Amino acid sequence: MRVRILVSYKDSVLDPQGQTVKNALHTLGYDFIKDVRQGKVFELDLEELSQEEIVKVIPEISDKVLANPIIEKFSWQIIDKS
Amino acid sequence: MKFGVVIFPGSNCDYDTYFVLRDILEQETVFLWHKDHDLKNVDCVVLPGGFSYGDYLRSGAIAKFSPLMQEVKEFASKGRLVLGICNGFQILMELDLLPGAMLRNKSLKFLCQFVTIKVENDKTPFTHKAKKGSVLRIPIAHYEGNYFAHPEIIQGLEANKQVVFRYSDAQGNINEEANVNGSLGNIAGITNREGNVMGMMPHPERASEILLGSQDGRVIFQSIIEYNS
Image (tube, rainbow over all chains, first blue to last red; front, side, top):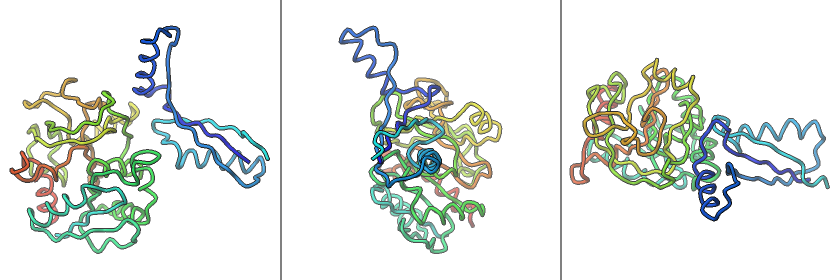
């Protein structure tokens, strides 16, 4: 099975890369874009795990390794169950 | 005294630091390999600058899982001295030995230049030979040195006098212009609450010989040596 984890800066943290991308988009005339936040995507190939195990282990590794909880938040989803 | 300089894959200030400690300050100095468990009876561990593990994932994020780092954590918990320079500072934060995290510089540029920093606390093992309020000229070289921590953490740092260095102008004024990377409170270096672990973004090992433009960085190593004697 495959899990996708999205890590990005918390809303309270300034994201200078996102700001720069937003400014570039504005320069191109897309001024309807109000804000841009940039993040990282991890896709994990896993052995078959039960729902309970997944719900426990994915937040655990996200918190411990993939994200720095001081400045980042994460969300995740199962993108392939097979 | 005996210093240990840790080498990770991607460290690049390890030999500079070793040279300054061994040849300029004439102290016994050994390298410590990140995969070992042995701190070789050193009195002070130095985590040098560089790009441990290529800065993969986040600066310092992978280095914290090195076997030696578990020993360093224990060493620090006994009140022994640990100094992290640049990437070493980032590793100490990932290890939770120091609070906070580094964001990318506000300019989104890698900054490699001399800066001036003001000594805010001269009662630490790392700065007691410097004078509070004095200004040191030491270079920085980083992309992620924009210090960030939550407001309650910053308040705690200030209340406990854990902020050791701030980016300032040459006269020691703390202002936005001197804050090259955008750090909260112009923070350039902090200690843990107990004062035995310090992280700083500027590179004192690159400012320890007049030949290199400044020897203001020496006072940090000299403080450690005298503290330990």
